[in-house]
Amino acid sequence: MTAIFQRANQYLFFAILTVIILYFGKTILVPVAFAALFAMLMAPLCRRLDRKLRRGLSTLICILIILFTILGMLAIVGGQIASFSKQAPKIKEKAKQGIEQVQQFVQQKFGVAPKKQEQIAKEQAKSTSGKKGGGFVTKFLSGLTTTIGTFVLSLVYAFLMLYNKEQFENFFLKLANEEKRDKVKKVVGKIATVSQKYLTGRLISVTIIACLYAIGLSIVGIKNAILLAGIAAMLTVIPYFGTVLGGLIPVVMALVTEDSMQPALYAAVVLFVIQTMDNYFIEPNVVGGEVNVNALTSIFSIIAGGLIWGIAGMIIFLPLAGIVKIICDNIDPLQPIGYLMGEAGGKKPSKIKLWIQKKLGKDKRESHA
Image (cartoon, rainbow, N blue to C red; front, side, top):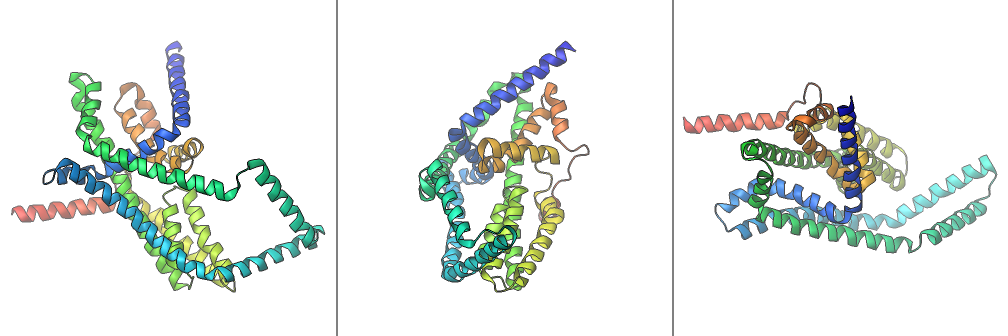
């Protein structure tokens, strides 16, 4: 019993120390974490290019692929926002009508006149801005600068990790004893494979959802369907919470921009149907069991990531939980923790991945024959 309590205290101390390091090292660790995911995603392509090109050029090509992919997505969204801005006067008028309806409701229920409501709202806004200071514009610019800086640092770190990938792999091998290096090499390979498959599956999933959202919203007649579909699909990168928030945005915009509630109801039905397809078909068949953790671990990792690193943590901590599980499964004292984090029967792998592997294997056998 004493040994059990000692081990529990060691785990608790390690967990507290890890949280402290993650929280106070956020500025440094967030770009490093994104860079590691980018590097693991592009490592297979980089190795293929290394056979034909110099290391620096092949690494630069991989980084440019990441950069242009993200810039392309931003360009599409920016173009849609430009066309969306033409409807600003109509949106403003609809918002004004909505505010007037709310004011009338408050007046009828609580007896507060509209002018009094506006005065109270202005006082609250002034009080809030006075306490926080700086104003919305300053905070927005600060947040935008921080995001751009984090992204640039992530690309720089990813370039260095890809350029020196063998050195990083050998570092983990040197941490182990001579007789355990083969096992460590397999664990490192599993971690890289899980990260690659998760990121690739997530990218495919977002693309499919964006296309389905765009088609569905266009059919029901929602204006700027491509923009709203893109935003809603990209928010699904944030598990659970992003799906709900992404679904609310098209519905709210339909309420604001359309003359009746009917388009908003149709949009809600479309989003519900597509999200159901995502939960029961797209997610399990595309992303599959690549991050082999149970629902409790997934939710806990997302909430913990949000508390420690914000939105970045909600995105990163789920694949990180899969990595932690792999490490626990291959270290004898930590195997109970790995078992607790995973599904009892194990998750089934991606059906689409198995289908592709089956087809590729069949083609190879036919070519050899």
